[in-house]
Length: 117
Image 1 (cartoon, helix red, strand yellow):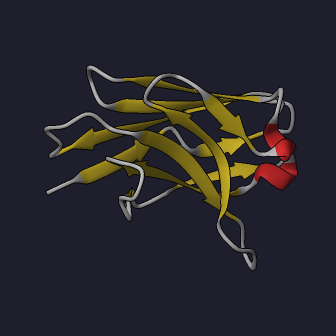
Image 2 (cartoon, rainbow, N blue to C red):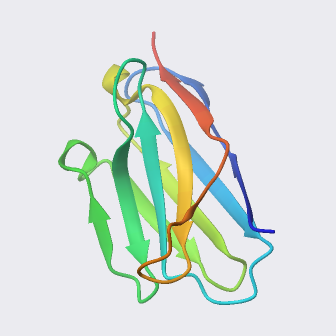
């Protein structure tokens, strides 16, 4: 079955950087869209960034210019480079994929990112 495994979370000081990775397995077809979401305590899960199969990207306004999403189609990986981190970026970050546009999608288990001095 489809499995997503995130890694790379942790504790970082404000202004620091982290790189999240997500490995997808159990998939024999190409992946339409790969995305990162996050959920802070007491808040709804929100889209951070996504990248479509052809390479086009979309970012939440709050992370534009600081975060960069990329994907490795051959190895079914998606990455999130997070720079200039702020305390407001503290959340559990989730990887999400959809195999085709109307696919309900699959979720990873999440990785904690904490930005604090």
